[in-house]
Length: 466
Image 1 (cartoon, rainbow, N blue to C red):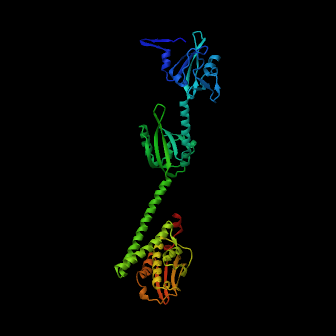
Image 2: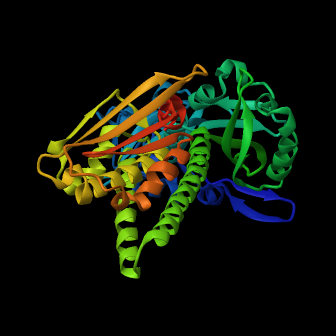
Image 3: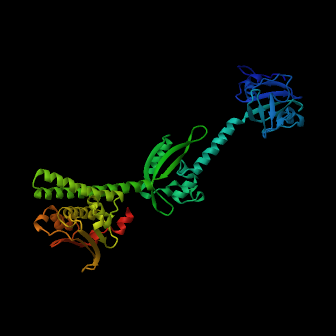
């Protein structure tokens, strides 16, 4: 094939071969019989092979295959079809097998070359490497799959704020179907008092900025508000112009609810710790009044704080939902191995945390004094604990608990006076807004506590809230 010389004014002469050699795509030419007359370096790179000009025919590939992998004869390739059938072929596809074993899919675009009389004198073929397109297609498919399967709402919009894409998670979060959302302004998702955000977002996107995650409020189709974390990035076209924005919205309602619960818990913990401090301060103050020596004071305070910790352990094990009366009595008397001589009866009542702490102190004092001076100091002595719920005069429920010692030694009222008496008559009853009565009988004491049930029992609302 003759090389055509180009001359334009004062521009240096440039041959067609030089022009084709400079092209970044694979180009080659043949004569009318299909023998290769020219190929550029891009074609040689695609083939991985340098054909013999004037000897190799139809195509410079070492071997050819159909797209399904079957071998393709060179006279079946798009260039051969074009020359044999004397017609241009657009977009024929095949696979070039290189000598090194690589397979390169390509599309071929052979165009017939004719002389001034219209006779076919050869053809020129342009080969496009489909690997780049395939990678782009695969990347697009993967990206689309990621967007659709994402648990976060992913929405794109143009620079006028019109929604252009909408994934499944966006429908779940905001309630609009793609048909309802696409084509509408993104302000349908923005509460009226947050509309100024959109102008700021568009301004920053136009400037090419990516807006890092920030927390805000958005509005669902039904009008309810939802806290979200937004990340916004510019969308660019093929030449780098900003044409829109992509928004990723994550529902942070569970996170906000967790924050609220943590704040509530911290307030509750603070309240409970203060209650504990009050109990300990009261315990130390009353013990100091009655202890005869510093050693006795330290011993008694240590024992009482340990008893308080037993009640606290019950609450922690139950995630601070309270404890039953039986559990509390068992926890405070187990150190004395008195379970066989202690009987309990009464309805199932879940004590609220405050009642657990103060009743725990009372039961500790009763058990300690009974082991030292009362019924539990004798082998045949025993203790009965009974509690009931009774209607009060004002229509509310009342709580009544009786600790009764039986078959104990003769009671010396003077030996039973001390911190325990203060706890049973004043500290515990007052903490429960009730009254306490301590009776010294011939063979044991009887302690009776009466209080409004609401200050003793954990409410069902309190239980379900935790």
